[in-house]
Image 1 (cartoon, one colour):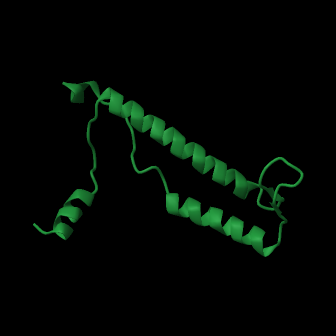
Image 2 (cartoon, one colour; image 1 turned 180 degrees about the vertical axis):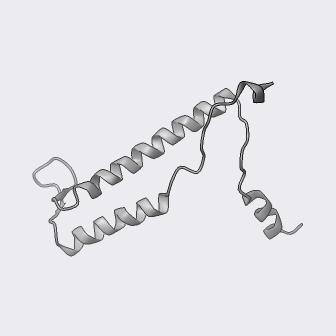
Length: 100
C-alpha cells in the first residue's frame, strides 16, 4: 500500500464509533471551545456596520465602516467561518443496549 492509499484509508469518514467517558469529555470540551470561537466571529458579523476597534484604549487601532480595511476584515471573518464549518464530530449518548 503506497502513501496515497494509506492516507485515503485513514481519511475515510467514520459513521459511528464508541469512546471512553474521558475521551467523550475531551470531545465535548473541544466542541464547546469551537462553538465559542464561532460565536465570537459571528458576533463581529452581527455588528458589521459598526466601527471595529482593536482594544479599549482611545489610541487603539480601528476600522471605520465602509473603508477598504473594514470591508477586508469583515470578508476575512466570513471566510474564516466558512473555512471552519461545523464541528466535525457529533456526540450522542450510547443506548443501554449498545453498552452491553
